[in-house]
Image (cartoon, rainbow over all chains, first blue to last red; front, side):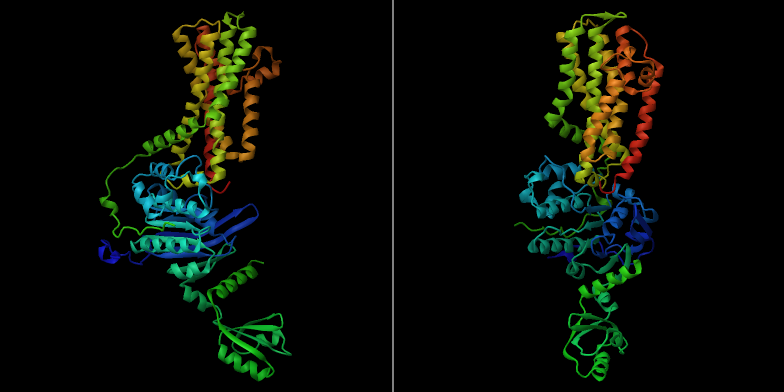
Length: 316
Length: 269
């Protein structure tokens, strides 16, 4: 691979200011009684690969819809490369892969891509979009005869058609098998090596950790964490002690030095720690009968659960 | 199992891209052609919009076609009424098909292209107008073949053209239904407005036979004026200004409604 040697333009500098690829300011959106997005502020620099991580209903898709100009925010603003989203989309600066949604029926994959390319000002050649999305083999098939994973790749081809500088992918690997998922992200890596900005929504933690430079965790319509995968893990208690602790109450354990929180899980107690060494010494001093002690490092899954659980409490 | 191909190493600099600047107008035109082709490919849809008015014309013409009333041949009168009926049905139904695109999510995909909101609406309205042509032409052809009306070529052309242009508000009405209704409600809603407009507008029974209250209602409806305007060439009369104004008012009012409904429909249907 000679990607870096052949690259003609230097990667975009991560300076933001007016050159931001995406800038969301105070975004709010409600649907009836449901306050789906509650004040999202986010700036993405050109060339960044950002994961939008959150459970279903966190507001990921609604935020993306506002970023693409598909939905107008109730309050706040969204700009893409300094322009309003609709202008940016019509200029071909943004390509997006929407979540699910059927493709137009009664046409072949190639006809569909050709048709979509006819609606752009300077589209990527149809063959190139088809090849880069890896759908050459199914180009002659009717859109209604595709498997879920194949349909996703066709949507990816449609996202490439404008030859965009920003790719927005809403749950791109849904319905893809493991192998396809891996090759999909490999192709995304190539795209980002060429300087494209990527924002993708996912609820797969590994995807966010593996492929994004930056992970933005969304829960209940708010951003609850923003940083690298490693930083996200570090923001919550680093380690957890699990042990059977006869005679201990949750309240007593929570008061031990180095313990951030404690909860009972069946016969065992789980202590999330800010300082697991100190907590363990204090635990054994206070409750010498403790046994079956395990200490494990928090993973992104824990971090994610904790962050989104906190957001639930705030919202309640 | 094919894999995703690697992106080409060097991305073409946007400034050196071939300057094939496509204008918004030509994108709207591309979209019109694409949509027209797929609509006309749907033979069931075309047959449905054409068959009923032709059959009804033949039926009524057989019963009353030879009579003459107020100097107008009833056969010719019926022919224009049924052509209007068919044209209205085709235009409303064409727009209502948007409800299907909305449900499948294709409508959202289209918004990620360079096609503007205005271009999209104009293209859809243009397709609705194109779809109305077979209905009008075939009813007129049935009139030539089986009718007792003897019209000059200028009268045929005048009637057809006047009727066709009068269908603009119905094309826009179809768009409104397409954006407001769901897939399930689009069909009944279309049928209901279509029948109401046809009957109250006097396409099935002459308005002169209505009670006076309904006569007033008819004269506010675009369907009444569409047929009325199309009949003027038969009686060698000038096109009534009131009718043109009523049709224009409906077109503009529904157009504004369609714009608002289009903006709202960006979110998931």
